[in-house]
Length: 325
Image (tube, rainbow, N blue to C red; front, side, top):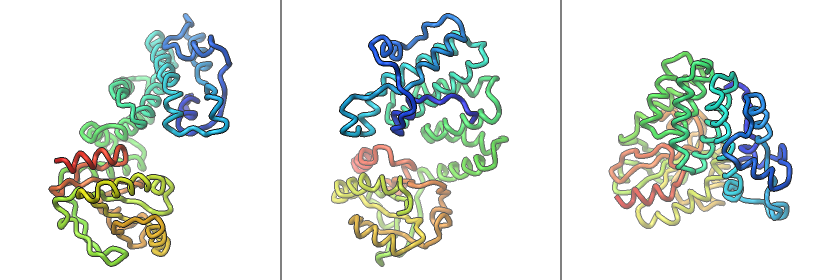
């Protein structure tokens, strides 16, 4: 998408960057938390938006004890929502201004960040502003497809599918069209059996058809993938908690080095089987199922049907729900 002004607050809340700081004082804080702009004309309102696009200093305790992602989100959430409201106030009051669409895109990006962080109450806002942008004649064709892509990545499969189809069939950049086609390929597998059969690196025979009656996580991952490694504690915790109740995991490793894979699995006490063919992104099952990014986590229900192709968010909750069916 175009190089629009990006909220510093977003970076502060999700990446921990210190790019700018707000002026101290109660009045400054009240202004940042206000949902409306004080300015009466567009230029002054835009300047006010720029001043609101700052990183508020965190609590003094953070200087000695770094905050967790959850703590940062909790602290910055009121400021993020206020910035969203200010962006909306701008494009609502100054709808004919050339910067109105830019303000709308910033609100869209902020709402996406919040939705992806588990703020489900932001979903209606994200969908509404996304729809408005897609119908905005001021949005370029390039930005139109970028908005479609972001909307698809943060929507349920039934809502994402038509967005991806528009990308795949339209004049989007070639790489985006290929990615959309890959996503659609995965969606076509939802609700259907997944055929995976192999001999694991530890010699175990794996056949998903023999795991009916179990809830199964298919984890596409690799030891060279930092987000995959970062997710592993949550995956292992889910396995330790739910395996006695009928939960299984099947690892599909995109590693190139078998020794590194087996060493990682042993060190981290990962008791589930791993598929390995050393083909990296050309991994047999990654290609078969259109996997173009990892970690990718799929959940299979007790009937052997694929129920979820994005199981990272609330993995334990999703597993527990499927086990109860």
